[in-house]
Image (cartoon, rainbow, N blue to C red; front, side, top):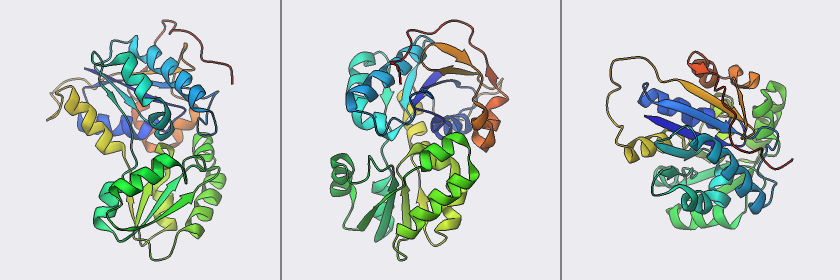
Amino acid sequence: MKIGLVDSGIGLLAAAAAVREARGDVELVLASDPEGMPWGPRSAEDVTRRALACARAAAEEDLDALIVACNTATVHALPALRAAFEPGLPVIGTVPAIKPAAAEHRAVAIWATPATTGSAYQRGLIADFGNGARVTEVPCPGLADAVQRADTDAVRAAVDAAAALTPPDVTGVVLGCTHYELVAGRIAAAVPDAELYGSAHAVAAQALRRIGATGVTPVGPTGAVTVILGGHRAAALPAAALAYPEGAALKRDSRHNLRKMGAPLPSA
């Protein structure tokens, strides 16, 4: 079984690690667009083009499921991705975990990129799943970029700035960007009285359900990891990915895919 993951950068590591944790035998195909990262400030049309290019490169690997491991791409490109690949290839999007957070807490904060904060999409999720909780939208400028670069000083500064905007009575924080899950420990330290809610494990579980791969991992070798950067060139995991436990764990199983992949992405 093989699952592909698409993101602008290394934010897909969280969902990839969650898949690996649930089913170690599943092969992973990680397709990202580091030269075009971040996708947040780009137009919906550009994000869709880039997500489709990454997805097509990954799909050449005969996937059983495709995870859109990016909130921005889910907002803008999920309909196009499903139109392109389903029903033959299940496509699973990533939605901020507002529903479980609001079910358990009366004061919730959503940490997200500036482009997502205040968007009609996020406001719609709050209206649909806020459950009467007081929800504060907290923009986190620069945090995803800092995570992508594994710049610990920049991560610390961006997290501290977001924590300062988070009301002190908040007891649940939704991580509205997949990159943020890679620095969950730093965020938890900045908002010590709040419980964090990410999407990686729920997305991984949904992908495995869609392909009937739930249950105990069979005895045997761990599934390989194939890395595709920019939609057309094979690569090892980016160096920044190895700064995080999720990336370091996947490195043990990574391999080069030597076949050229699809067409190049649009120029940045």
